[in-house]
Image (tube, rainbow over all chains, first blue to last red):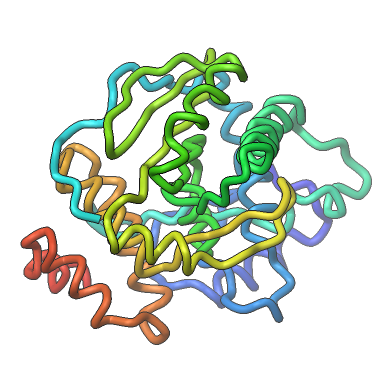
Length: 76
Length: 204
């Protein structure tokens, strides 16, 4: 999945910023929360669109809602 | 390794951005996601034409608050007074109405879904009014607060206990925003739905 030339260094940096007890889900790497704050320069929507590119390639037929919202407890 | 009940955060990588594909072609076709982004742009444009200022809730709002996971749900909180004109506008876009009540509406168009929650109670009105503005690749959006998002996620779970993803989202949001959250407000939402113990469990 990873096409960059420095996959090893990427993996190390990802490991450094994650907790140990989480599932591996990223380019055979380690998932992470995006750094908080604008200083990181990471836009979560851009990251999400990138993620969805992969998801939709793997799952072109996304399940469509076939039933309405459930329940009748609306308090907000 | 992942344990049942732990937050499962699908990670994304800057290695997925085009700049990281030097020397090799991107391995996927961009059309599908363009459609997803375009659906959101189209909805935002429709809201603007109808002089409404919705707030993003649901999975997109979870993404906005730094928990990036796969979702195609497009959910907005809108003022209840705009329900009828928005209903007509959404049907004009080719959606079919799957469900509509005084609290919510579900629309589908082929594989695309669009859900609205109507703000007509004081809490939701306040959360809608206080939503923050964010520039995104799909355009300018108003995003509900983390606390409010947790409240709506809790409401979703209380209404449908099979929506365990809502609990995963709450757990993740609590985890990464714990130091900045207004916990009094969060506790209010859990008390509102008679779930104070659940908050302690999620924080555990």
